[in-house]
Length: 425
Ligand code: NAD
Image 1 (cartoon, rainbow, N blue to C red):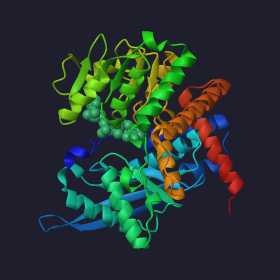
Image 2 (spheres, rainbow, N blue to C red; image 1 turned 120 degrees about the vertical axis):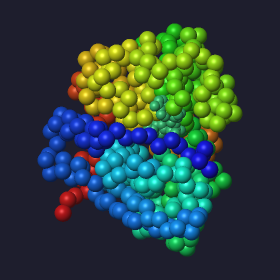
Image 3 (cartoon, protein in one colour; image 1 turned 90 degrees about the vertical axis):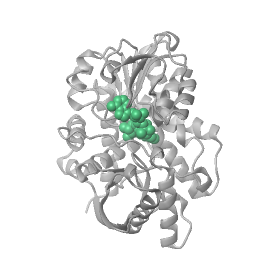
């Protein structure tokens, strides 16, 4: 079963994602002149849950796994966020990712708060049966946390549609009623949405196209490099390529690949599907992953890991536009360097929000028990992405700040206003 599981991204010890998120939060809060009480209310998660899950392994031994679910905010609606299975999961990381979800949902204007969950385990080392028992134990432990009107998980690194199916099944059994809306990212046959598989990459493409329009970059004379060739990277590359942009560099864990005349991305996708999901052996010039980031291209799409663009390589970036498919690919210290060098960055909380937007559509369809066509899903998601981009762009002009700071300003202002309107004890 391991091939279906995503590679957990290493979180470097030196960089604490919570601190990195807070730096950006602080900057936006300063500009907004956020009341210190509200600041503290939004800084800390509303609720955190921790459980030790005991399961029987295939060899009969008994193992205990540490599990988390953090609800950063349920102000704008039920909290929403993925579940990560990785041996690197820790409470700080889950807290940062939960806050990120609050800001992401607020930026695109969907009625959700933010949450994140995780289990410290190595899914690649576990059998399907062990993963199923672990997932069911987690769902049991979180039965009063999860709920279609309370807290709605989704896949993240190390989890997939099958894991969501187990959660949906276990939750429905415990509650004694079929509850598909308790998770999103389910298989279609269990109430998953059309368009969900491509949603994040599609949102990256819409963000890229909209940014190119603003910056007057002509697609047909432009080049693009994409780091990472998993769900987000491969689909972003395919759809950006369809806009006429030449995709000259791609990469995955096996390294970077360059073709001056551009890749035929659908053919590359076919190649990896037959090649155990990897680009290894692809006919092209081999380059390093570092080199890919600093190529002379118009657009760069980091769609692999955190902290790829740092203060060390930010000055060498030659792209005019960076569209963050991954979560947190740019370290905080690189932001100022990129801004100084006039590199426009479409931040993660905007650029990759297409995924959570279509997750929201999945939940809506589950709640009403009626399913939309892929065409309808895409049209509505594209509209939300374009509107969100436009709003962030206007805020960046109004405050004369980067798109990242603008996205945080927009999100924090929305959540802070909601906090005040809903009232405080
Ligand atoms: P994935 O596991 O499908 O793909 C990750 C890709 O990155 C793989 O091709 C892997 O080989 C590659 N990779 C790993 N290490 C690398 C390295 N050192 N250099 C270059 N490539 C490397 O994961 P994904 O779902 O595409 O997610 C990628 C990023 O996008 C993550 O940051 C994730 O949090 C974020 N994201 C994903 C979604 C979604 O819907 N899948 C939504 C929002 C954000």
